[in-house]
Length: 528
Image (cartoon, rainbow, N blue to C red):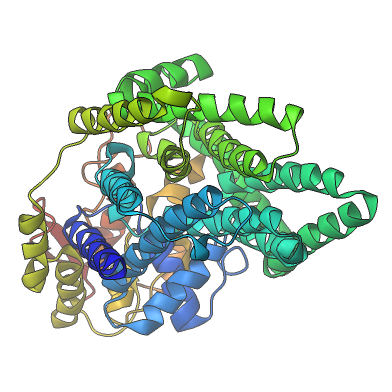
């Protein structure tokens, strides 16, 4: 009965994730993950080595798999992200059950109906929670980084509960946390968090065990990092540009072109408080984090409890991810989605030791979560969301695929120049690899000197004419950046002006396209 109820519930959650994903708005952020996967899958091109890339590289390998799995590349990428989020949810529940089970095997102590309902409530709250809605519906690298960080936490929790699993768990947790950090840069901070946690466990076990555990953990980190080491060896300057130089350029871009205030730490904290922390649910989650962190530290100093160490590891991970959300400039709302899965884990296992008042405190706590959730999240009718699944023609990724295939009515096989190359690649066209990051490296390119652009293999509007003379495009697809900032202040859509200028100067013919997901309309310049 319980197994069946859980099966039905999590299938419904998967359907809800898919429904939200196929109906989510089009985002130019997704191209920088889908397109590198396509370049790897279809052309054997690697980040850094063959084109500038502004993220850690491992996400490209996963999106290459999704691109090979279906001709609907964008849809496959979003669906893979949905499956990753479902895996995250199952791991959140599994970690909480393992911690409630103490040192025993959680499978031997099945959850009660009260526990199941508590899990169902918090999972449903999670998939409807404001800060995570954007990353839940888009094909980004958040889902994969979260999945592997939760896997690392799961291996750590199980490893500290059983000495027989400790060595294997240390290696696997190291490998998973390294993969998470090599998918999304801010998750690399968790390598240090788990190192500290394994070090505490090692001290408890003695010097001989300590050396073995730490070597296993380091071995896992090193093994998972070998592919990126190869990429760094092949393209050290390009790796340096993509993960360090670009971050500084992006900060300068925002300061000079988009914003004049709200770019320092005080302003970031103010934005966090005003946008997130004042919501009752988030206030509750972060209060639980503070309590769990303080309580676990106190208990670790008083006694050697694996449960307290496990709780300390989850609180440490959540805290590190929150701090890393303040690192980018500007700090955007969805950056603070990273700690929420771990905050949900802490809430799943939250308890007070209040003696006779414990039952009353638990009831009041549940009531508080329900009230906080009801006042902080907007719930749509689930039946309306499930109904979306019955009409594939209205799915945004399907409409993107139809746009891609419609290009064949106008342009012969060849190269298409666009800042959203994932779309023509879905129809089998070649593209220009420098556009793999979409508008992001392109919009900051002029902040580099010509010598630096040559050193980092970065293309700017100054190098574009020579590139297009050598490899002329069959067509040029523009107007994706119409609502976004350009190279200068008050320059909306300016990033695509060099493309259109080239088309006009070389006699390309303009064709208007009106895909349903982009009401502004697009322009396809066709070579005559």
